[in-house]
Image 1: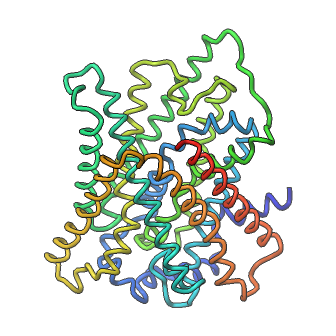
Image 2: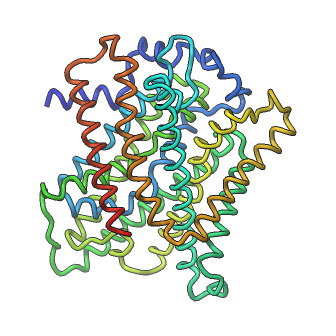
Image 3: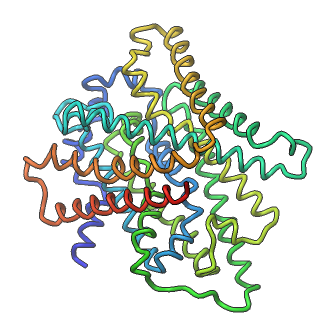
Length: 437
């Protein structure tokens, strides 16, 4: 009980004012130290804490929420504790990753890749950059495919039914392309984050409402279980993957007007996400028990409400894509010197549009014409997400700060647990993805 309480204080609360000053910059103006002027050239383009909250929720709370009741079917009611554990891990790794950006006083590293290079050299940077880009580009491709398939199912019986899945996949790619080309900074996609979060909330309300209504028509309470030890790894891995999102955290923190409020924004967003996850999981498993299906839509009574919920989650994945891609584009454009400082405003916008358009074209072509795309990406994603979300942030943190003797025995134990869970997610996620081939 003491360990749990101490972990919650460390993970879900902000660190002391002194640590925040050392780790995230003692003043807002220090945000522009080092090379920061290249990534946030204008203060008006920086994001507030509220905007950052919406960005985090929009990025994290995606389609994974639809399989949470099924995750409880695998692990039993103990899955509710897994949600709290996964939230704690997500908050902790997000905070230590950003802290690693400031491991040198007065200098802020610009990306997750640079953190890996500082900890493990050029090879570390190459590994993290590859895993990060493959994971994010693959997720966006999958989201575009899912959106196209979902739209195609929603228009059945209408005059545009004959257009087919490929048309809607291409249309979804065009929507994402338009948004990402129009946006220069993360701040520019704030409206997308708001609507993405609202679509998720509406979908959650519909799922809970339909589940509760359906419970009144059930003749007997479906069977449930308290815990299933044998299926615990699968249940925990499924839930942990639903909290993956820290690949974007360095860029989100860099875009804040007050970067020292990063911990607060992350803690609030993660707590909110855990709350809506717990609501959907509890209602879905409580109503349908071990008969629940994944996604939860398959267990709900069909009708206009389910169609609206499907439309909401479709809108969400499309709105999340431009935000996810910022972590790829910002770093790549920095490496290519695509900035107004070197090219001027007009050429910078032109080359940014060309670069982003070409990359979106590649994603769209893979989504449209690679038949096994939706089967191959989950395998790569399971490997990449498990390492870059759970294992590598902890490894970098210990490598960069371990010699300062800041860690207690309990924190070393907590970091070890996170690494073990990350490796378990890698094994389980890869095994499931291979089984689906």
